[in-house]
Amino acid sequence: MKINSFLSNLFAYLTGKSLFAVSVLIVGILTARWFSTEDRGLYTLFFTSAGLIFSFLHFGLSAGNIYFLNVKKIDMGVLIGNACTYILFVMTLVGLLFSIFAYLEFKGSFLNVSPTMLWALLWLLVFINLTETSFSGLLLGIKDYSFLKKSLIFQAVVILLSGILIVFNLTLQTALVIRVFGFFIFFLWFFILFLKQQKLYKISISLVTLKNQLVFGSKNWFQNCVAFLNARSYIYFLAFFHTSEAVAIFSIAWIFIEIVRFVPDAIGTTLLPELTNMEAGSNKASATARCLRVVLAFVLAISCFMFLSLDFLVPFIFGEAYVSSISAITYLLLGAFFGTIYQVLTRYFTSEAAQRFAIYSSILGLCTCLVGSYFLVPRYSADGAAMAYAGSSFVTGICSLYFFLKVSNETFFSVFRFSISDLKVK
Image (cartoon, rainbow, N blue to C red; front, side):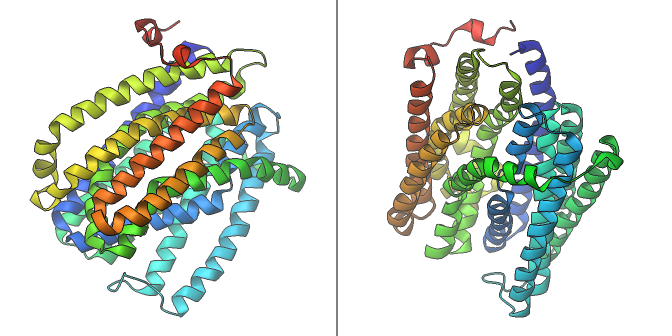
């Protein structure tokens, strides 16, 4: 792996990802300050539900695009055409289902939101996420990090502007409409520019290739769905056993974890195309282990700073209403450390077409998540959800490490033998 190229790409991606994370943090502060805890919880529940539906529909298309572009050498135009075909097909079916829900006026806890508006916004947001993520996989495959950085910055601006408007005492429905509309503007820019850059006239469709993409992607799809449930199912347990106020408390605690998680997520995202481009026989495992050591060092440093600052940061930034989230953050920080191991190593398994090891790890983690949440959330509320997350992340991280050591030539000590040379550009 060419370290100079990798670090250059990583820096470009991290720049956009950092601005995106900052915008999410600012919106989290604004929604905590201007929304009631109930509306803050429903706001979180809406976007979590969109993410859950997206995870089930994505079917690993992004990772499949990277793999088929770099390893199978399938033409870019074919992959674009296949992605468009799949997205239009599944979103038509989802649209019909959501129309039935809207007709039946089903809207759950969103009592002050029009059912038609609720399901229309949810459909549009899922469609945007599905399209953007699928095409971003192709951009990662060709290492167009300049485009990706611009994309992340655009999304950050949309999120920030939609959040700032909340200070004008918007209703929950209006706040949701403004944010989703902003993402639609972003989608138009992204889609048009992407197709223009990739030369629209070269797009074609191959159903045989699409089938192979989905077969390959299904492994990533399953592990991504399980990973999403590992990270987000706590929201639904809290909404079921408690109220939207408990969801709000946990969502504030989760903001701190997103800050911690974005470093391994960004590095893992740029690591996958690097690994798929490495020639057979090259030491992918060694490169992955080095990345893991560096990422864990960063995560540990960030977590320690947060832990020592929580008593000041939470009331100062979010207000006294969310002081009770401090204990939950402590448990979540512990879980985020072990979750980092999985976030990095799962990219190695994908590059080797050995996603089954990530699947085994994530399933064991999900079982821990579900059992822990069932027993802990009713009794300890947001703290119980955080405890369940810590336990789930520990199991997922340790299992993925075990499988990594099993399939590679690395040892436990070689993986975690950190030295200053790991930080040097070679």
